[in-house]
Length: 448
Ligand code: HEC
Ligand code: HEC
Image 1: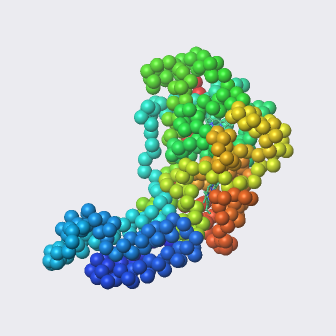
Image 2: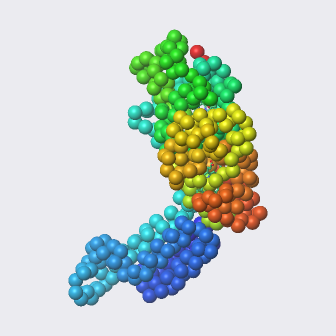
């Protein structure tokens, strides 16, 4: 409500609660004003703003706040709420009532409007670290070595960094990711930046922790194709690794500890000090005026924050936007084979006739999840093209165009936005300019 509209709104939203406190008669005017805001938000099709305005309006309608918070108010004003005839206010009670009302109104208003403010985008503060795998410098260093170690793949040609290259913001820059030699992958390699904030991993969210995730690509027939029993023995004969595992885990090399060390390294890959972080921390000059207009669209007319919010600009949920299929899915036999293989592994009965990526449906078998994919982070988005689970869009312009049209055929998650060419440009400027953090510089480790 505050950010989305003009400065007048801001002034009013600060003054109104106080004014009502002084002169309760002003509630009528406030209701009228909030109604206008509500209608405007409706017109601007801003769901969250509309909702918060509506809520505030309802609160005003209750007139007597003690309907909402009888306990607090009656204590503050010492007026028994439910007793017969209310005693006459003495001066002191009036003052208490006034103070209570101002406090409650201001708190409510800010709670509601802050919610809409920047669509609850949050600056980076701290990364969540699981208790069972605390970060230590030695563990992070060990994980980094393993991340770059080609021993982790069957024919020793690939490391994790092959498909998550530091220079390409931990992607591989391909639409469909690279793969184990002679095989094909079928999805886009996501960035590992801010992966620490993801509640679900992979485009379909089939894994929940980085420790569990790390073993998947190693075992995958079309990614690293490694036998993990063999890997353990190969690492156990390298004295530097044996030493490092003893130091870090006080024990020997195991696949679980390999995964724990890699996860610790991945948790250090964080987008920091982006212009958006600085802006949210109060530096209003951190964004150019075009990017600020883009932000307004991002949280307002574009409704992007319905799904892209929080510190990671992602809500940890799954939606079927019906992104067009990447043609290689059916045109390249190797990719088709991989799609069928994954579907078979996940017990999809008719896997040989599959013509599209079923998304999260493969995991949950819930019809609602057909072609649903996890909301990805938008941090460093300008550096992680191509986009979507199948890399079908090469540029942010294509993504914005797709979203403006209301997404893919038959989807229920998005609706047409009707953005002008200029508004699309502002939105893109916001995505490119505001969300790029400092470059993450990785010094390549020496592999023992
Ligand atoms: C051959 C390319 C390739 C290699 C090698 C590879 N990955 Fe990936 N990675 C991918 C692809 C593709 C996905 C997405 C797959 C999906 O969603 O189905 C992915 C997803 C991930 C994710 C989930 C990210 C997210 O946002 O959900 C993590 C974490 C990850 N990889 C870490 C690793 C680690 C650690 C290694 C090494 C042990 C590794 N990857 C090796 C291609 C690769
Ligand atoms: C209903 C939820 C929802 C809304 C609203 C939404 N998105 Fe997304 N967004 C997603 C999902 C889900 C994906 C991933 C789809 C896929 O991989 O197939 C995505 C993907 C993206 C991507 C590509 C990210 C990548 O790394 O591939 C960009 C950029 C993006 N959205 C920007 C926006 C912008 C800008 C808006 C507002 C105009 C917006 N989104 C509105 C859910 C949403």
